[in-house]
Amino acid sequence: MDVFRVYDLNGYLEGLNRLFDVVRIVNPISKKVIYQNGEGETIIHGDDCYEFWEKGKACDNCISARAFTERKSFTKIEYKGDGVYMVMASPIIFGDDMYILEILKDLTETGIVTGLSGLSLKESTDIIAKLNEKVMKDDLTGAYNRRYINEKLPSDIFYAARSNEKISVIMLDIDYFKEINDIYGHIAGDLVLKEVTNIIKSKIRRNYDWVARYGGDEFLIVLKNSDKKASDMIIKEIQMALRNKVIKFENYTIGLTLSFGTYIVEPGTKDFDEVLYIVDNNLNMAKEYGKDKVISS
Image (cartoon, rainbow, N blue to C red; front, side, top):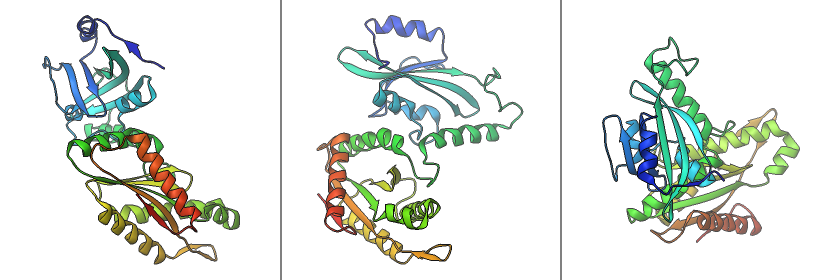
């Protein structure tokens, strides 16, 4: 645990403002700024925290969400326009609530960030973007990873409730995946994981819905602003695409089926842990009932 309690918030922030270019307090679940000082601004309340970075969307590698979830500090390098920043996010408690303190230092002209010297602005920002993306991606499949689930799903649930929208959460498992590894080897198993990921990505809305590797051969799909009818349709499309897919490994053809557990999150009804528990339980029932099944609730 790396959480510290702040009693004199104004005095604490005043000291930090003299040392760093931007100091702000954010709520990483609602993505709202509680306080910000720096870059000519004095105090900002209620803005989306990611607006500062001028990328038009929330950060995939959100270290503030990670700091909130894991209760310790994290650091990353990020870019904004033609500037390169060091960002540190630390959990603090003020009153009865926990927030995240973000402190930003402009490193653009310092030369501290090695490997970027002599590169163009686009080359530098591309490198930083790829590094931040890599932290949140599964190396094998290119899907998001478990860390991304822990940081993104709570925010999606919050925003769905605020917008009075439903979201569909789907957990799936590759049937008999252990047998595939045992019979054909782990290279074949890796091929299967990649093919399943590619099929899922082709059936969900790009830059809106998302898929992450939950662990092993389990994946989590989140469909925003989506009800059971839409969820069932996506599952059928994935199943159909998989049945029509010929997966070749050496001289073998590998046939696949999937088991699904799904849950439609009504606005404001469940939190992150409950949602994961429900979809995981539904997936386990689908496997117990003979696999290649869909269990919904």
